[in-house]
Every structure is written in structure tokens, then in C-alpha cells.
Image 1 (cartoon, rainbow, N blue to C red):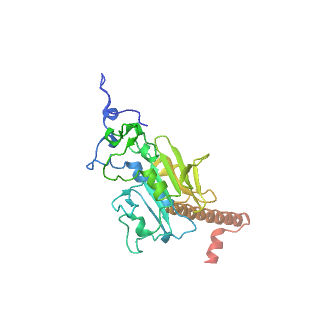
Image 2 (cartoon, helix red, strand yellow):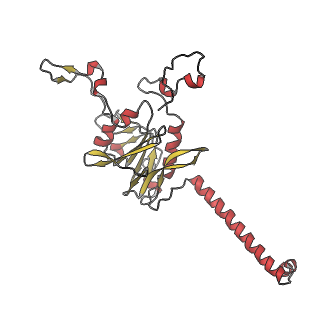
Image 3 (cartoon, helix red, strand yellow):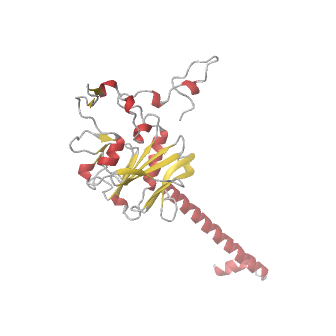
Length: 287
């Protein structure tokens, strides 16, 4: 994923700081359970998803999306939560109780689970995001073997389920999408019965017919950065425009109409000159 691994061995002559300084993923945060804070991409990409997540069969007042927000999923364990990079919900008020912005999303209070979740792969969370776990890498105290060879589960506090299990088995999110900005690979999983089935993405696009909306990779500029982004598109294959893009389109259309009107006026004046009529005289007579 990265061109260098940390820690970087010392060389002679020394490598530049750009090659040796650690990234946010190599530094612990104040919370020992958190590997680090989101990077800039984890901030911008969810913004683009929220700006374009506009299912046509739901009014904007009944669509909610969020990024890096605590998602509480089990009323029996009220403190357990996951924090998706981005998720979208339909059929709930945009504002909580139609009054205020949410501080979190509590499924047993909302009554509706998210419909689609997007995780942006990062070095510290990739395996968890994809539901890949190595049993042999579990800490020694987590596995004990009795004399008869059977595994004995340790007597310890109940631990929260992993992210994949929550999305698939508990919340049963219909669409789970993961995107890596390092490889530009898009993967999507659709709930099929009790388990996720990975979709065959021939054109790096995910169509969600129930929402009449899809997710697809788009090469373009967002917030001044040109790269491959994930954004929504409609049933006709058109990108859902952001408000800024709509304003730019309106300005371009107004400018085009003004240019067409000026061209028509100039054509009319030219015809008058060819007919021996002084346009200035004609225009003064009209005023």
C-alpha cells in the first residue's frame, strides 16, 4: 500500500524526511483503542458521497447520511458502536425528531437501519473492513486447549462483535461497499439471505435498484483535488451533481444563452446592412 514500511532502516547517506517520517497510521492517538485520526481523504470522500446521495424516490427531508459518526446497534449493549466512514439511510427525518442535528445514530431509537455503508480502506483497518481475521494471530491467552484437544473459551468480559459481523448479521445492511484510494479498487457486497455476496463489478459501479441510485468511480476534481472519487449516479447513468456543480452549470447555461442572443442580434444587424438600412437609424426609430 505504501512505498515504504515503518520503521525505515537507516542508510548512508540518510534518506530524506519525506521517506522516513511516520504517517498518522504509525502514531498512536490519545485513545489507545484508536489507531489514529482520519486523513484528508477520509474527510473529503464522505463529503462527496453525502452531497450526491439523493435517491429520487425519497424527499430530501427523508434522507440522512453521515461520516465518522457513532452508530449504536445493540440495545442490550448500549455502549457498543461502530463508526463507519460513511453511511446512508432512507425513510428517516433529515433532522432527529425533525428538530435538531444528530449527535449519533441509535438504531433502536431511529427504527430504521442504514441502507448502505461505505468503508475507505486504510492500513490499520483493512482486514477488519473486509472481514479477514487470522485465528493464529489471536493473543495466546484467548485460546486454551484441554487435555482432550478441545478448545476452551476463556472466561472474560463479553466483547463487541467485529465490524463485518455487525453489518452482516446484526444490522443486515443491504449494501456494503469498500474503496481503497491506494489501489483505486472498489468492492461491494450485497446481503443475500444471511450472508454477504460479493458483487462482480465489471465497470466499478454498484447499482441499488431499490433506491434508483448507484455508486461509481469518477475521475474528476472535487474541492480542488483531481483524482478518482466515489460518487452517486442516476438510472440514466448521469452523475448526481453537487450544489456547486449545479450553480456552475446554471452560470454556464446563462452565459451560453447570452452569447446566442448576441449572435442573433449581430446576424439581424448584418442583414439590415446588406439591405441598405443603417442599423443605427433603424434602432433610433424603434426607441
